[in-house]
Length: 374
Image (cartoon, rainbow, N blue to C red):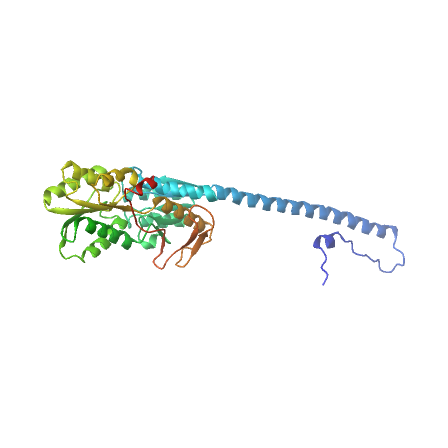
């Protein structure tokens, strides 16, 4: 069926007949002209409105493009003095260079759940579109995370998870089980299958360290002659971790090994053992960034030094947040996004536990440490 253009229909003048007359009087002849002029004016208005609509549409599309370039991921970290979070931020910024937008770190100078709450509230009030949190306290931050979501922000966690009801998913560097068991295996390789072991962690409320330590403890159950004698905390402070380690060497003179899944706590543990002349006799495994820890592995004070790639963690976190904001994923198990081109292409999926896993533990050795500059 042939369709007439609505605009052509509007410009067509209908035939007008005058009843009771074979020939229209002069006054009647004026009617088509009057009607035609009116329709011309109407079509002019219509065209003006159509042009305006198209201009508004183009402006709207342009505004959305600008908004995409203005996208910000606010990364709420445990503390700004920890170089580890410089590495995660650098990864997020690599992603931002690939797809637009920006990423910034926001954090206290000393790790504190309450300080993070204040930061999250401030970012929500500023209507930052996406917030990724490395939680110092998994429960304390949840009310602020929920408030931010009500105000329109998309809120996720990375590196250190919150309670699950505070976020749709968690971007994790590796499975917590793998990280904890890997540290146990490295320590056993260094000290053997018997002796006293202590743990130097970040803080009692650190969800990621607690999960790693649970897996570490479970792995050591395979060795009945190993005794875990204590667990102490450095509170993400190098001096406090140093002091706690010195105290352990005094309290447990037969100590054979220390597990320190904490940065900057791990290099502090190594420095403490050197200060009391027990480097090498007490074996160490743990994770931290190479930039501040590598020298202790190279001189033999740390035997089992590992991590993952924090740059990739930040990179994937940025892509995940951006896809969530744009509605390409909803945050449900099974949702996925694909990075077709970029530094780390691939498919990233939210698993049944609400996590996106970005990699596996990586051991640093004298042969490979020069390849990692974070």
